[in-house]
Image (cartoon, rainbow, N blue to C red; front, side, top):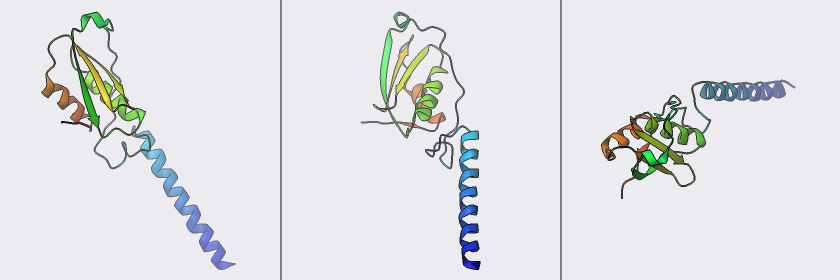
Length: 125
């Protein structure tokens, strides 16, 4: 009987610790895929693109993105890119690709810096 109480207590404590970590991860913007846990990724604030007329964006570039594992990650990358002036990005998680429209010729370094600031990376070659 005493061993049963110890085993049940250990299981209850383990479940409680997992639950606390899960709640903490969700509260900090994570999605339980690791993007809000120990990985160096942060929740990027929602960025609404005011001008959604594709005709106003004569330039485009597709960026292969690394490090995304869920829709929350894709939204972080998209918001980071959309925060750049004159930029409208849409990120496809399945393709691991950001399709970026710009009003001026794309500044590759600025786009890459925005992706990196969100905790992800642009794949090269």
